[in-house]
Image 1 (tube, one colour):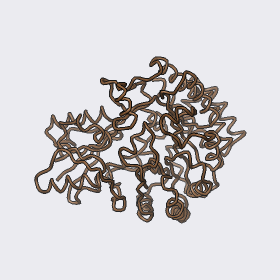
Image 2: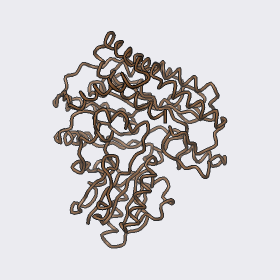
Image 3: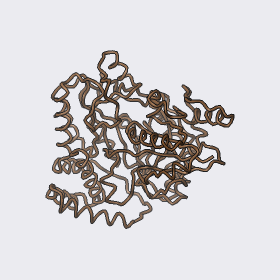
Image 4: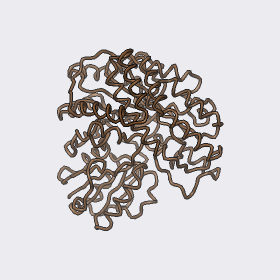
Amino acid sequence: MKALLVYPKCPDSFWSFNHALKFIGVKAALPPLGLLTVAALLPEDWDKKLVDMNVHQLKDEDLKWADYVLISAMSIQKKSAESVIKRCKELGVKIIAGGPLFTSEPEKYPEVDHLVLGEAEITLKAFLNDLEKGKAGHIYTSSQKPSLENTPFPLWELINLHDYSTMSIQFSRGCPFDCEFCDITTLYGRKPRLKPTGRFIEELEVLYNRGWRGGVFIVDDNFIGNKVRLKKELLPELIKWMENHKNPFWFITEASINLADDDQLLRMMQSANFASVFIGIETPDENSLQECNKFNNTNRDLIAAVKKIQNYGIQVTGGFIVGFDSDTPSIFEQQINFIQKSGIVTAMVGLLKAPVGTKLFKRLKRENRILPDTEFTGNNTDLSLNFIPKMNMQKLISGYKKIVTTIYDPKSYYERVMEFFKEFKPAKKKSIKMLRFCYVKALFRAMFILGVLEKGRRHYWKFLMKTLIKYPRFLPEAITFAIYGFHFRKIFSS
């Protein structure tokens, strides 16, 4: 059996980093971890190929080669996924589809031969059993949440690691919190399920042995969902492994703001070489936080919490939302002030969306506020809404535009980076340094594009000079942030 695994193209977006990746000459930010894991769940005697459409063009010859095309996609990849489905149907190739896009709205894809929904450790196994017996069905779903103890290692040999800026790996699924707008608990449950520590370390060893050095994104939706096991089991072993291997990786992950409440955990993450953590701040407005069930963020000084994490040498990237029912016209200025004071350089500000299946979607549907002809795009920055907001829609969109144009204006952006440098205290670590030609090229490209061609070039040079005088140690970070800023301005100017 010949299986072609296809990862649809992601549109140009905040998290694609497309405009930044061009500086270092890589093709995509992250590999398709889910699809690589699905490949490992397929029978060993199947022939397997993978096409990541963010890296390579999908050719008709690829599709004609396959007995089955397996597509995994998120909502943001909807257009590309539907284009792949259309091409498969035209060529008469059978389709197996899964991932969040198809799991959320399977009824929209009757033309797909086999919908394998939810978590593949359960549903793909059931499908393969039926396929072997010659009676494969149309839809496979399960309310069961599988243990991660036997989840296979991704088949890294199906891709070229160096097409990507960062590798990815998973430690847990699920989140103990229950934010109204979030579909994570719908998809993966509220009880975090963890991989055995030994298995996680083995996965790192595999990446190390394949020659990877650099960033590794631990893709958990809340890495600290089970803090007890994290501190007792994983982090001690991870610290030891990193020291024994001379710190070949730095880690990026996602967590909740209560990370700031645990000094021991912060010290351990710092020792393990965690460089960055994404936190859903959402809003500085207490009423809006309560409205969306984000009680974990209430009754605390959010800026102090962010700065505390930065003090441990961990950059905080933040998610922010406008469009809550409780939001008033003052929210736009509140968000700008908070972001600037917090020193959160990478601030993803989006309009509230209601993903299908979430508590928010169900509430808005009861209130007859879901817009029937508007689909959930999965892209919070594309100015689309799939529901009727309480605030006047034009005021909301206008206020949103004001936030992003203000915080990514070169002057404001570089000021925010300097605010971050004031708090940033990374541990001094000996690590394997690989001076790749692409990074040298990136430096000169940045100097030319940002320092000569861009309108904000005066602020760029002023920023670099300030960094050299006050924080010379952070010059590599300064150059990286300047390139990020270029990407964000491109996204929001479009």
